[in-house]
Length: 275
Image 1 (tube, rainbow, N blue to C red):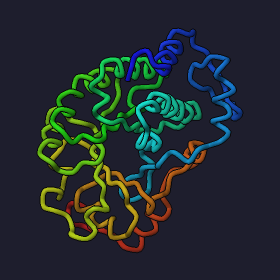
Image 2 (cartoon, one colour):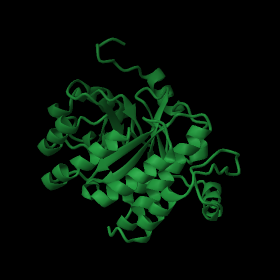
Image 3 (spheres, rainbow, N blue to C red):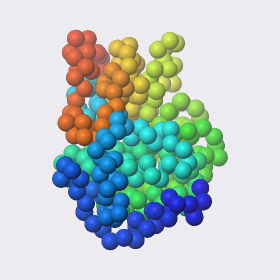
Image 4 (cartoon, rainbow, N blue to C red):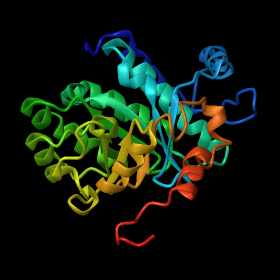
């Protein structure tokens, strides 16, 4: 991505403008935005895109965080703009009195660019969000070059108080080496892949193997919940828990009623073997 692109120009201009509190139609403060950008962001707020996937604890009784889904499929030219929207969403919740951690996915290869990390740093610093509310979800971490080259950028993010998550964990030796070196705060596993053949031994009790929170994604069947407990996941998300919702709907979400009902009807064993 060229540092002379319009997105980098936008980030630089936004950083250099004096901070202003701008309120949307609901009366909640926004990030520091220029008056010229106010109309565009209010319009985006009113559209209320369904772009936030709620994440709950494994019993569905508590909302723990949210995954900003547009970044999962973003093109190179969309990354910074969507990252800004993700930060705006977290700020909307924070200014409304909800401390909801937002996970913003980014491909590993872009984290190797110092210019890209500079832009992310400017956006995060200008958001003025508390430490712990912004998490970076590293995805497409498949090759040794990507693993080695993105480490410096991740360390810079961590110095800003950003939490690190690894998305789409497959159990490969390269990913395990990266986990041991970076020690991410979260590891995400697509649980649907184990429906047919079952869980391999290396995926059992992952919470005891790594110093990280385990997240199970794509939880859509009751059978998936059994695998969630087997891998020791503390967090779940997917259609069975709750489908993606708007950022305003997230303000009124505290639990997954479907998951709570399933667990009340079919109690699962905990890690100690007790009911």
